[in-house]
Length: 195
Image (cartoon, rainbow, N blue to C red):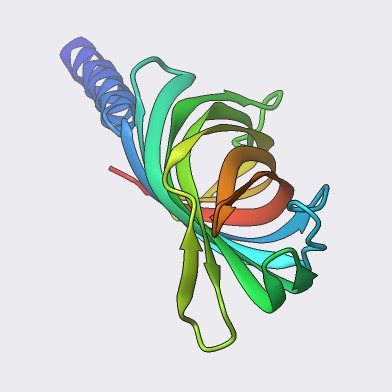
């Protein structure tokens, strides 16, 4: 009888430790995040309409609540009139990297999440036929954001989030160089899988 209780207790302890170990091994995650973008200022003299885009990232948690992420993003803004002409689209594409902090809210499975890091992006200007008429070349910018992470289905997480992104580049038309700042708020929701 005594051996049976000890065996049962050991079995439960091993099961709990193994479950904790398996959960701790999920240090990697892949995330896809579409979003709607709202410019906070003009791009040069161009009034940007509401944009949209997406981002894909790979995250590695090197500490229980802290991880590093890297990925690629694409965002598009339309403009009626600008210093480059009428009915043009401005597309920002490139790479992102940074740190992510995640921590549980009280005694729930929901986490609050904060991200901050750099972007290495460029801005392409396209005409109504989709032809690229200008490319700023890649340069450094930054982004910060926050939201909540809601786990479901074991390895999946749904993360509504708000971000602010800033990128300064020069657009050259002929011999005239125009410095522009692409600053916007992005509202989106990521879907990630951990492994």
